[in-house]
Image (tube, rainbow, N blue to C red; front, side, top):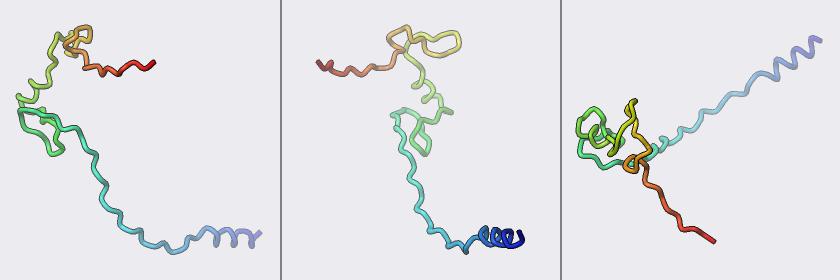
Length: 87
């Protein structure tokens, strides 16, 4: 039994580790840069602290009581992509 414990303890020791090679910096994901009239953040998205950017983000049509756009109206629906029908 003593021999079994000695073998198990030797098997669990790790070999000296080699230093890991330094990896290159991760590429940042590209975001869609919106064209705004106001200032933008470093990543290109509009900075919503400014009034010009807040007004550009407002929906064109009527709103519901909670402030979200009412999707029953055409002005608030997203532009649908029309794909040709294949037969």
